[in-house]
Image 1 (cartoon, rainbow, N blue to C red):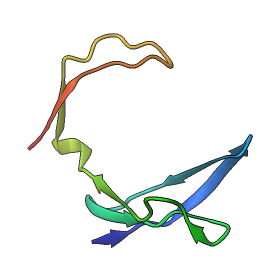
Image 2 (tube, rainbow, N blue to C red; image 1 turned 90 degrees about the horizontal axis):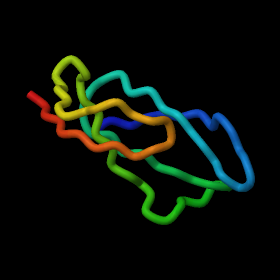
Image 3 (cartoon, rainbow, N blue to C red; image 1 turned 30 degrees about the horizontal axis):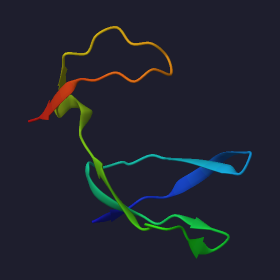
Image 4 (cartoon, one colour; image 1 turned 90 degrees about the vertical axis):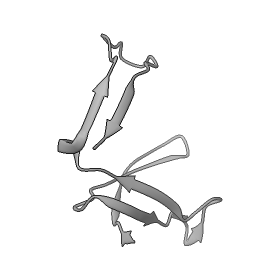
Length: 75
């Protein structure tokens, strides 16, 4: 299992947003803390995939801020 470091990128109206960059595909444990206290559900398991091995099917034209559906496979 890998561990990922992240950076807080913005805080708006009580919302905290972070981003992280994973260097190796695999399963990561992401600990999320606010004020030094773990948030409910933390740590989270996040799976990262090699994008050259992912195929997406059935993706039609999308619209910003609208949900779309598709099928994917990993080989």
